[in-house]
Image 1 (cartoon, helix red, strand yellow):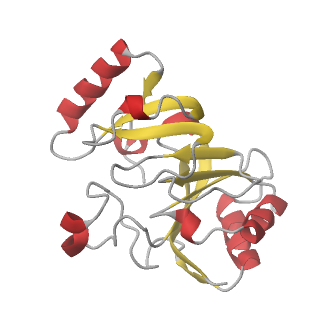
Image 2 (cartoon, one colour; image 1 turned 30 degrees about the horizontal axis):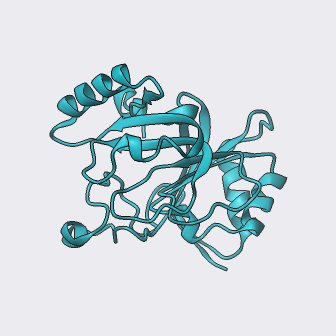
Image 3 (tube, helix red, strand yellow; image 1 turned 60 degrees about the vertical axis):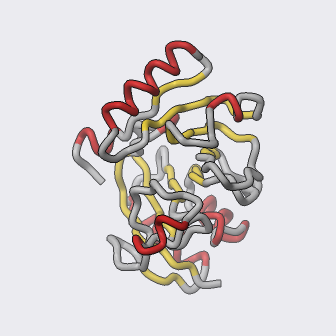
Length: 210
């Protein structure tokens, strides 16, 4: 299997329960809820995505012919230290490409594995940190994990719809865009009234890194 990757780079994880931690971010191309092209946004299930996941032209991106090649690139991106290694698989939708062989190859390089997914695919075994970000209008298949991170507000995806699911942490992430300030205020107010939920801010944007 060939893996198509938009970008691979070392950074600080900027969102959710792993926020602030050093990680290698591996962003796969493709998503089942939006093509990634602006001409298709209005007709997509997910219309608010702020991520470029089209093509393989990002930093460290490319086509990887087998799982060992991709795992080796992830390891090289981290550097020589074998301590506290974390890779975050994201997209797009990473589970369109991730399989158990790739996960094992990355595990063999000493990495803890985190996945950020829209939840429309089942996450394979042997993943340490599952972050599900539900999207209104899609069928949620992955209903357990370490964190549920809901972009807020979304018509048709209110927080109470997800509170019965088996997640350890529940986050509201204010929707980016021209109404970000208002959305932060709405998310703060909701969390104040409903303390199951926590605020997730995109701190990588606040501190000015990718």
